[in-house]
Image (tube, rainbow, N blue to C red; front, side):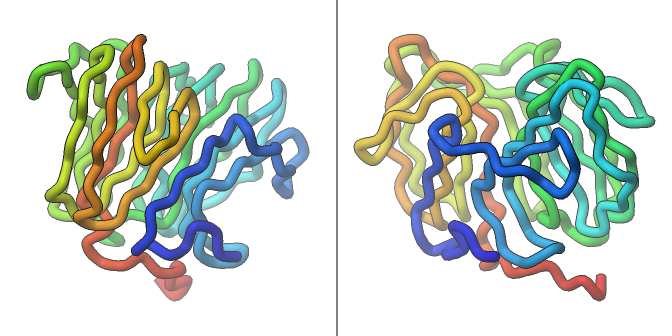
Length: 226
């Protein structure tokens, strides 16, 4: 299955306007944002766990990165409330579930295959660091391939980025306007390398999950031999 799989094009999904699609596990539904591959896929997805639902035990051969958007996500390693950012590197394994229910933004098969760093950050407990007028950041991860952070844009702040190797953002709170569209909570935007970002934060500002630098090489379907 290919969805928003041309990484040379701008892609946008206002996920709250999209229907939930059932996964193979009862009580676990998905809204797909981009995807390359079949049963095993490089994928960016919003996943909803109904209260009391669970997914079978599995290994993340290509790594898993997620941000908890609602509720409490759980596995044998702990409870992860709203705002928790987690990186489970390649070869990691778990049995996910949620007793109270949860919604997560998750990315699969998008790691350096040699990465073995596990990260858990409560982004709600971190103090944003100002980086320029009207913009602050909470660093989450950085290596030679990508940089991940939470960005907080003050109300009505213009945000312009031109020199990048791919830009991707999910709205957590608030809104912004870009390309003639308004991006509100759970809206997602992906820009190809060096495509200008000319955005303006909404009247209540915006809190975003942001990744950049990760599209310097055109993504492809997972090599399951890895």
